Length: 380
Image (tube, rainbow, N blue to C red):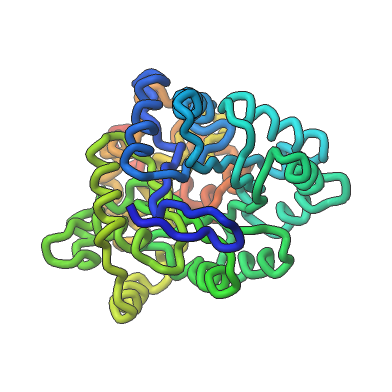
């Protein structure tokens, strides 16, 4: 495993981090915790989670693993977790959130605590309000409960720069991958040049990349899969301090750790070719983060938005998309879903939560039109 200094700290972190959003929920918490322990044994020492991840099981799973490590006298690992400004708008709530995470995970401190899911500047401003979240996090830092305060951003690169210029955080976590990097790379480069840590999440774009091995084959080198190319892009980029990966199999951990030792960065000419190929379309793709699961009508919005990626990225015709409506199961469109695209009431709660700032309501209208032309119109 390759290690680098997290800028602005004394911590040597693994270039591959364990992302806690993709646990297999069909497994027990103990089985998932074993994956964390295996990753630690392979050299991964940065572990990222958040309240609510994986049906609120993620921090609990990490807690099982961390308690085992601490019982063996092993303290050479770093923990990252988060809270949203709207969840913790006051100093007191922010402190309570930190203490809750410490208790659940059974650890004495959180090394990297993030102001979570800043999607626009008003979220940042809310966190910085007098008597607000940031004051609470600073108090926790003074008490030794937090080492470093960072932020998690789903903003365009220009807004990431604005937040960094306030000099309130040690580093930033962003959704960065081989498809969407032009949208956020300005923020990545600025952070790198100014000495901030950069943690990249969502390297496979919510499964979009491995689902399109054939269409995206041009991204890979000979003898390399597109999935491997995407992981290599994040892991080998010198501008990225840590690449978070959600693991479901030990073999995936093995592959990522091997790549950390031998991955070669993409050439600048290759990155320019990718930018030209998509002409900015990738900033409009769904990453499958799931934050839009707030629909009062029970519409499986992530499934529909991942389906819409087919049109957005590959310019498929309406006729092709009508045929693809039958493939919604491929995008986790489960049988117990309550609503269909045509049930949208345009409340726009989903758009308020969308980390990619997508026009979800408009897309649902379009998808409803496709569905109306298929036999698959029975409300479930």
